[in-house]
Length: 334
Image 1: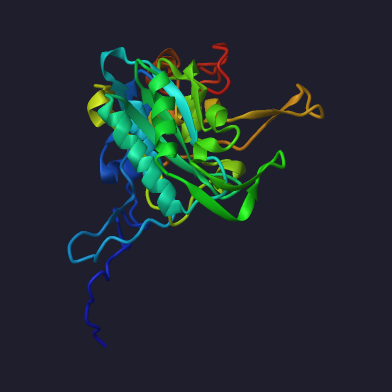
Image 2: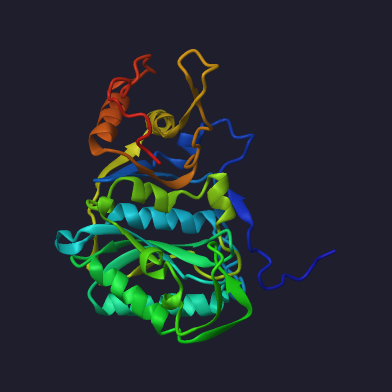
């Protein structure tokens, strides 16, 4: 019996680009289209997917953001890889916290929006990411481009003061046993001056632990801090402060060359943990396997990536010698 098509009926459906009965290889069927774009901080890999969404028809209105999707995470990594601040502005790692009892997420987001407008008007640019603390309060991690890092604290303190006076019922008791029933502002809470805005200067140059920390969302601890039903999980403040870096591209790589380079990046990204029961005192963790299809982002030193690519393109057969075995780099791709 024929059934009428409804709006949005094709949402999520995919169309295969090949048939399992087709005897031709995948690279012959879809064509040679693998590519790698090289940037100062890493590389963007792309291989055409085996499936593609069907187009056409009305797919209905866009829904609310429930969680943090893999596509959104990839877009954040891609923006951080492909953009740099103008005029060599120094980068600073920043953590913003609202002191005191847990605040309604809508009010906390409104306070953060006020802060973003103030730093953008001050000529700063930033990339931010939202997390949830164990006590249920929203807090933010940022990479801020500015020549005046002291102004970051001043702007956040002014935002907290603008929240105004509050009365707590029941009274709020902090970790030291101090009791608060009424305050002039959140800045009146002991410790707000020291811990509400922490600025780290180790992020200068756009590399290092802060870049990896911003992208860490796979570990168990980070999964517990992903907010649900609060809207966007990351964003950019002051886009005019950033410019897009022009990459060096490698086009039309064969599947053998492409996946040889991918495997090397996966090995570099594999973490190791102390384990005295093992022969060398360490044990390998789970291997990162993102990017088998579509687009994926990998961070590494340019010289290491160039070494891997040179080895992969110059060898027609898989070599036993590892191209980065003696480079001293154990975890270059977060």
